[in-house]
Amino acid sequence: MRFIHTADLHLDSPFLGLTSMPKPLWERVHSSTFTAFQKIVDDAIALKVDFVLISGDIYDRDQQSIAATDFFIKQCERLNQAHIPVYLLYGNHDYQIVQDAGELPANVHVFGNRVTTTTLTLANHDSVAISGFSYDQRWIQEDQVQKYPPKRNETWHIGMLHGAVRQSQDNHYAPFTTDELIAKKYDYWALGHIHKHQILNEEPPIIYSGNPQGRHKNEAGQHGYYLVESQGNKLVPQFKPVAEIEWTSLTVNALPTSSLAEVERSLAQAIDDKLKNAPFQLVELTIANIEQLSPTIRHLLANGDVLEHLQDQNADNGKWWIYDLLLHQQNLLPSMTDLDEQYWQQAAQEVFTPANIAELTKSLARDADLAAKLTNLDLQQLKQATTQLLRRED
Image (tube, rainbow, N blue to C red; front, side):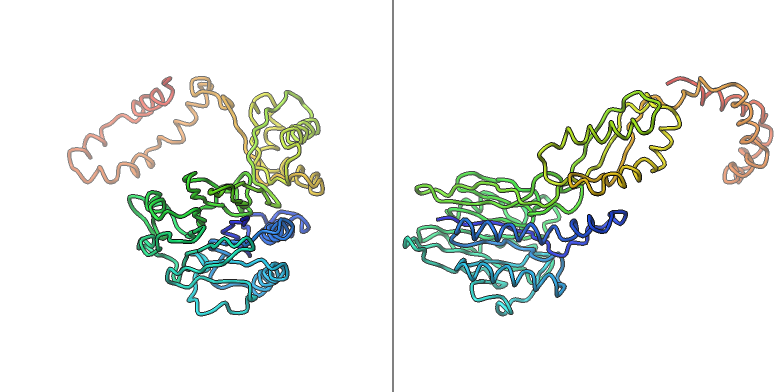
């Protein structure tokens, strides 16, 4: 037996905060969730899998665009033409009252809003039971695992669940424990909801496939699906990356130079070296050791000019694009004790005026005793005491 486990396609994700991208690159990013799922379908057909599981959040929201719906139907129809069944459920993002499969092709089985089990018989006569349910509202706080039937006489039993491991509080997404899932004696649990692919248990496999395409910097790294194959009486998962783009954070050390062009060349070369043979990367770049650079270059780095220039220069390189540039600085500001005495005196004259003192002590002056003391307080002493405190080394 061979099948694909995926989840959290989030078709139509908006990809907010990338408005400065050139249009061709923006279109590539915006369509990346679609591209990732198309690659999964390509692999399913090429590998001749027995079926495909989609464990919730096919769409990014409960009201889907016509484009997203049409795309998903067409991909399911491709699988239908290849005689590959699809088993899906809806999650907390695309929750809905399930009455039937709607416009989906005949090869698609949609789990309803209560836990049910469907079975199929493979070409080798193995029987497979698949259990699951779809969300009918955004939050499901009740444990649903107790409603899943135990494994019976089928060759294989697979559980599909869109949910989160139970926490001490805020259990909004069909909370469960790993021990609960193990107790069902299933051969595989195909989980959805968490966007980082991870294995909660190895035997039996209890796995989050993660989303096939990361959508922001908190979903960095590889994203894809799990290809699962039977080996003897076990099911063995293998992660397969398919993301069209990846998010990454890089730190590059600044090299001492007085040339802005040389700084930009060295940054681009460092990124190229770090991202060899990687998919297209959206980069959050941190530049360290910037105290080695001139004040002018540091200013251009800080005000966004260098970022904008690097974005323009590398818009068509097909390898990476910097969406944010951060500076890691050490000891760039002089300590307070290094400031010239005249600046301390000037600041004190501007801050410690009678009007400012009166305003700052207004609430204290409501107390008669305090008011008398404040009135008699020598302003010059206050200035001297405060500046001495500010200048004291830690």
